Picture (cartoon, rainbow, N blue to C red):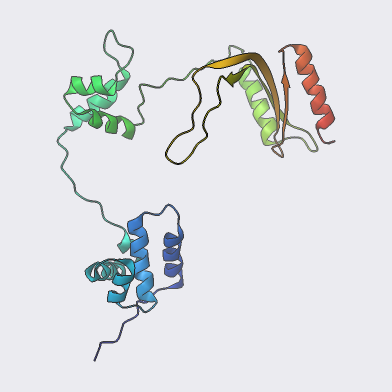
Length: 250
């Protein structure tokens, strides 16, 4: 006589969490499989039937069922593996990190290859240490600090206007971008498809430049925009008049 199937007990919260893992589009396959094991066992399937339905061996089902009974949902999380022990000294790791901001004489910056060669380690090791400490010698940003003595006071006035606008007021964030190039490729490219990427020719025909004026309504996210052939105060005044016509009454 066959032994009766013992149904795995689950709380409503546990069942909801497991179903969420199964339905999550970006969940790892191993996580979905472990959650499915527990759900099938809770529905009354035997270990053998659960293994057959998921295409795995019965000992795998027994293993994750046992871990779930011991630690709940936390038992389905795979523990950290020991891996190969690190052979780099803490001093060497510190040098790779701290010296990244001090390039050698005659060079503007360290590269991962040059640092690896100088320290006698693999390039991947330098990449890992730099990534872990958010060090990116190959990137740079431009900045410009205002020399206006009253810049900070003006800055907080603008921020205060955005955070606490007056009642029935229209708050706009305006900007302009000049010299937008109007380019046309010399030949038509192929669209994106299965097995090949989108293509375009390397050469183009230049049809001059345009100026883009834009204003963002801070309260409702609406954007007012206008394209002009020139970039003078006449075009800017014309754009302001367009905003006055198109903006809703306050």
